Image (tube, rainbow, N blue to C red):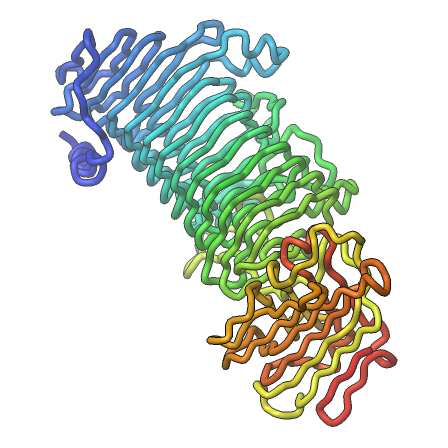
Length: 635
């Protein structure tokens, strides 16, 4: 037994057999004995492997209605193409195939599923291409470790594959790859970790371009690549530690059309209509990146797709849904660079305030073609990124985005402009240099810059009214923070009759004051709840139900706000509401150089979307605001 095989067997025993739920083999299954362990095994009937030996030449399945039960056996080799391959010509339908309880290690692809000759399908109509579609191909309860390339490769125009209860780790390229033209596949209940450090990895390698040899440092690859693959479901998986990120959706641009013509084929479909739900994504730079090559330069890849700028082609990943996922410590949770995406009901958490939950927008398509990312829906997401009140952002413009009911740190979140993430000179590249074999690169590899902490979004709401007769006064600004005094008052005229009914005691109130840089001078959520004599805190409602007074006699009122008065003056003028906000012993840092100030009063966080909120600003600082002896007054 070679040293490699001994190591593979040891890894299987130590690491991965607990993942495999061994059970009795199916009735009628044929035992494949160890005298075939060093031969390629071809299977066309129900079979199970002898787990006492290591299988070094791989297994091929070439017929329908077949179950292969490895019984925990190791299939391992350092120099072979496929560990388990499911293969048939494009005019042969395969269905009802199950592979289970396998430990596969060291192959180019540990598992490879292919309709042989599928290049021809790319030239057919869609009906013709899927005339002999595959179905019910199941890979389950198995482990893929340390493949030299992709761990599990679902090749072009393969359909109906379910990958479930798998552990995919250490792949040199992507952990799982869904190739262009494949569709209607499922990846579920699997662990996909620590993949992608070989291909285009951060340690660097050489490539030739235009007769010159370059050294490049790459980003590595992602845990799951959805490359021109459609209508797949990715659910309840765990992703962490993958080199470039967790899940990338994009379309191959027709790579190496001139330099590798024998391997080129036309990709006619985008990574469209996929559903990514209920996954846990931990760490990594990108969680889910939709249209991951839209804004990247692909010049060295020798693409057949037309360039509308030097090295820039359109990417295709439309109408995808990302919902109910848990993103933990991810730099960019969901990045959206193509149209029709639905990002809903996800959770984002991090201890780094520079991390972002959702970033919508693409640069070159927007600037050169006038086509910003369109028709994105961002709803019902909750972020708890420490120190980041505004983790939902757009860059380079956006069109027809629906943004509603998203929370950050327990309160309503806004959607405003962000910053383009750092990127290398070419796709999947961090940096390049002309290669000198006499002086190869040394030292730590370069890395992409991490994002900076952004100022919060300016106060806003979905359908604000203009506040009138407003006045902001902040005193004691020339003394140390913590003793400032603030008053903010004015009035608004809302749609009447009120819908929903006006009731700050039940809904609470949100109050923001920001300067011209976005810095929050005041940021307070006044909670709902009736006045409590014991705590000396809460809302008092008048007998007529037209005046609500919040009082906070505690030692730590929200942002120093001790009193808020909301008064319904509809008897004077329908919809007229007056407000007065008073703060004491707060820190209301207001730099005269960063005027004007903008104020927001929202009558209950749910009311922000319904328009029960008012904005006020003082657009000409020299006339509207003045500061004298430590007191700033804007009116």
